[in-house]
Every structure is written in structure tokens, then in C-alpha cells.
Amino acid sequence: MIRVGVLGGGASGMAAAVVASRNGAEVTILERLDRVGKKLLATGNGRCNYTNDIIDMSRYYSSNRDLLEECLSNITSKSTIGFFRELGVEPFFDETGKVFPYSLQASSVLEVLREEYLRYGAKEICGQRILAIKPIGGAYMVQTDLDTFEFDRVIVAMGGKSNEKLGSDGSGFELMAGLGYELSEIYPALVKLKSDFIHLRSLKGLKVNASVSLYADENLVANDLGEVLFADYGISGPPIMQLSGIAVKKINEGKNVRVSLDFFSDISSNDLFEILSDRFINLKHKSLKDSLVGLINKRMILPLLKEAGIDDFFQKPTKMNRRQIYAIIKELKSLRINVTGFHSWADAQVTAGGVLLTEINPQTMEACHHKNLFVTGEILDVYGDCGGFNLHWAWNTGIKAGHHSSIIR
Ligand SMILES: Cc1cc2nc3c(=O)[nH]c(=O)nc-3n(C[C@H](O)[C@H](O)[C@H](O)COP(=O)(O)OP(=O)(O)OC[C@H]3O[C@@H](n4cnc5c(N)ncnc54)[C@H](O)[C@@H]3O)c2cc1C
Image (tube, rainbow, N blue to C red; front, top):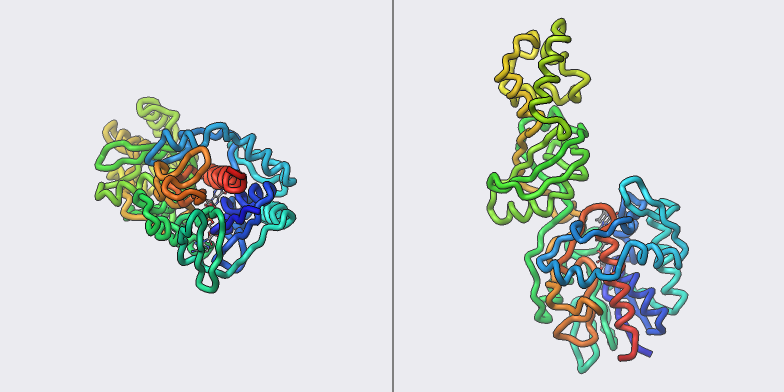
């Protein structure tokens, strides 16, 4: 019987354990926390957004896109959904393409994975921190803080560095670097951004739909659309989280990073000029600030007028000249918010960067310099957008490694 050591009991490791144990391997999962799958329980706000209806390469980030594509070739959301259906999880598709278990419970995903590998005789050893992986002949010695294990094959599924309390603390990177593997720079992604925007206190808690453009040294680098959330520290919400990986990278490169919010992305500046001009005439009995109620979220009105350089909020709207109307439009269509930093690893959903894809075989996930050592999930130099892309990557790299680590070659 092939002895397979799964190092890390997260999403990727558990998927690997299911496949390897089904293939007849003697599987042992080593996990540093007191139980497996702690992070999985927190995913999708406890509902586990486990894949996406449309798995598109443009939703993934890696320093080697060709190899990323090879890793994910022939792997669709259908295959992920099929894998979970076999375990009893029926998919629920939301209107944006996110896929959840029909039960809307992350715990049900965890339960079916565990049940399956335990049914095939896999063992879980929790509460032990892996300290070293030592190649011995063609096999491996894995040393933890409490014990030493010997395996014929090992799957390194130790995750990234994000959200340490849910397990991954970056120790996998150190172990892989110690074995001689090359890593790209790691940084937190899908993380909230800090800002010195002076109106944050008054806007705290507000959610507004906007088209968000990200600039580094005044060059447009990316954009996204959705609900932006203002907080006392800065900004978050789906489009901000989506852009955060690129923003963090640019900040680390020493660039000046800012976002520009367009609250009327479907209306041109000239059309908006007509709309505001008509409005200011029709609502001439109101104050300037009140004339904007119903068009702009009420809490945004004063900050936007201040940013436009207009301090007399109670003047009649008919007093607005062309230059002032265009100054308001500039703020409505390109409100400037400097990004001064980002939240810490503890608060990030994923890790960008990691073990380079050039260091593994994309067909099998086997490491290039060590036969019988496989690397899967977030520890690799790949991350995805919010929407199920990260778990999709974790499961499927785990499934591949689980298969290739457990067959006679
Ligand atoms: C709050 C939150 C919500 C998320 N929601 C979603 C979502 O809805 N959809 C989505 O696609 N993605 C989501 N993600 C991202 C997703 O959870 C991860 O990308 C995915 O879990 C990575 O799987 P993994 O197995 O590679 O790593 P992990 O799930 O991090 O598992 C690694 C495991 O290895 C263990 N380990 C690490 N080091 C050691 C060591 N030295 N010794 C022993 N054990 C060790 C850890 O304890 C952990 O259990 C979310 C992340 C967070 C933090």
C-alpha cells in the first residue's frame, strides 16, 4: 500500500485525501490546528462558495499564465460540481454565477469530504505542527513538533499566509524554500484597503454602487464594478477586494496608488450635465444640497460638494454656473480616493504569490526537483477573484495530486 502524507488539512488537502484514499492509498492528514477544515467553515460567510459557474482564466492571477492555464486545462466548474455531487452536495447557483452547496452550509461540504476519506480508511492527525520535510531515498520523513512520520509520497497542501487563526501561517513557504524551491514575492490579496480620504468618518458604513478604476502613479491598471463599502479605515466591498491584490503589489513597488469612483458609469459627463442643469431649474425652490436628494445617496452629497470646492450647500441650485456643474460631475464620475495601505495578513482572504508554477509539473502537481512530492492549493503562485475561484483551484490541484500520488508508476 502506498503511504501518502497529506500535509495540511485544508480544502486542497482534504480533496487530495478523498481521491488518494479512494485509489487505495494509506492516507494520513497532518494538521496543525485541533481540527481539519477550519478555514473552509468560514468561506462564503459560512456558506462556502465552492466554485463558479464560469471558470475563466481572466479571474486568476499568477506570474506564469501559460502554466496556470495548463494546470486548469480540462478542469471546469462542471468537474468540481460533479466531484461534490458524488459526495452528496447539490449545487446552488446565485445570480452572479457563484456556486454554493444547496444547503448553504459550509459545514456540509466539510462533513462530506471527511466522511468520504474516513470511510476509505484515511487518518487525521491534528494538533501537530509540521516542522520539516526530509527526503530519504525516494520517500519522505515528516517531522512535527510532537512526532516523526515516514511516507512514500507527500502532498504539501499547507496553504498561504492569510488568516493565520484559520490555519495557514506561511510555514509552508519556508519549508518549500528550504527544499530549494523558488517562490515569487508573497503579499496579501482580497484584502481591505486603507485610505486617508477625509470624509471617511461621515461616510462610514455607506455602501454605494460604482465603477472603480485603480491607478498606480496615475496609470490606469485595472477596474471593476460593484458595491463599494466605506469604513473608518478606508474602503472595501467586492470591487475593492477584487482590485486589492494589484493595489497591494503596486504599493509594495513604491507606487502612488489611488482609486477613482464613477457613480454614473452608464451616463456620459455631457448627459449628466443636462440632467443636473434640468434638475437645478426644476428644483429651484430647494437648496443645492436638497436638490441632489434622490439622485445621489444623501450621505454622499456634502462630501461630493466639498470635493467639488462648493461650500455653500444652502444656496439656490440655479446659482450653479457651468464650471461648478462640471466640478460636481467630475466628483460624481471620478471621485479620487488615495490608497495609503492595506489590512494585514490576518484580515486577507488569500495570499498572492508563492511556489512558482515552473517548479511543478502542471499535469500532476508533482514538484520538479523531488519525485513523489506534490504541491497544491494556495501555497502555489496563483490566486483568484472572489466568487469561488480560490476554492476551485484548491480542490482541483488537490484532486490531481491525490490521484497521481496514489497510483503505481
Ligand atoms: C474568510 C475567508 C473566506 C473565504 N471564502 C472563500 C469562498 O467563499 N470561496 C473561495 O473560493 N475561496 C474563499 N476563500 C479562500 C479559500 O478559503 C482558500 O483559497 C483555500 O482554503 C485554500 O486552500 P488550501 O487547502 O490551499 O489552504 P488552507 O485552506 O489554508 O489549508 C491549509 C491547511 O494547512 C494547515 N497548515 C499550515 N501550516 C501547517 C503546518 N506547519 N503544520 C500543519 N498544518 C499546517 C493549516 O492549518 C490549514 O488547515 C476564503 C478565505 C477566507 C480567509
